[in-house]
Image (cartoon, rainbow, N blue to C red; front, side, top):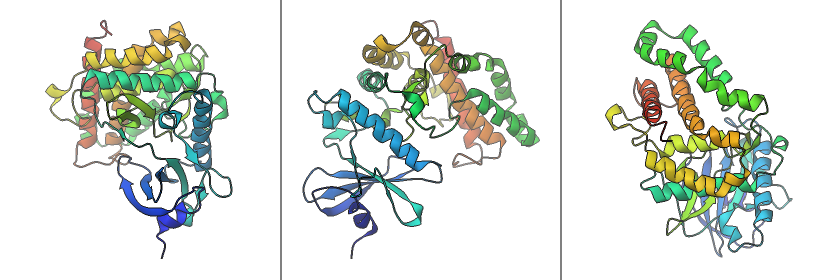
Length: 352
């Protein structure tokens, strides 16, 4: 009797047969499986979480369109099938299969002999990651971003995040307000500066682009020699500004400690990794950026660290209703961690 995954796999076009599967546990939202087949290539089958993503057809359309666009740009380059995600069609020619329980499935070709890194351990990895995400933005720089759907509305909208924060202040317990008093002061101090990028975007002073919006290093594939190979996990591809992708990559790459490290003496901003990532990023992308975009890259790092600090703090004030927590003060510890990282960055801002 066929398993559910085998039945779903059979809905897609491929010239091979199902042998076995392994669950890939790197993501936190979707269910992802490596499908091993009788003949290579293998495939990656993914169930998109329609509880998190409200327009799954739009999401899949975004990532397939962008991949197809990049494949066309790179069609004359060697090993293009290893450097851009490729999606399989269903037997009806669709980009996804809608199965039981209203679940949406899409399928990609597996890229063999590749590795991912959960954290950056040396400047070379940061440099190669910068090149990969820079190339992604370069290849899509003339794609009309306005044709893509907004997968997560207002994802990096600072006014929206402040509105959520202010609502949380109204419902927070006195105990939590007291615990967070020092952080509330930091939020007030930085509020004006943290809206600069949004105003530049809204005023049309920096262009709207296709952005990845989840540029942690684990979303970059490397070959076995640790050379950058391919950008993956494109579920959040949508219109944005270059600063979202640069800033979030820096936030995750340049923290010397885990995001929820409670010993703040271990938390600092690694300028060597910043320089290495920025070098790779600008080597691939610099020619397509405006002077104003380049000038504001350090501010992008500050802004994306701040927005996560604010979101963790907001959830703490709300009673921990959004992020999964492992203990009572997990969210405020995360927020303190990000504010310490931000303070370390600010102390080295001239160098950046």
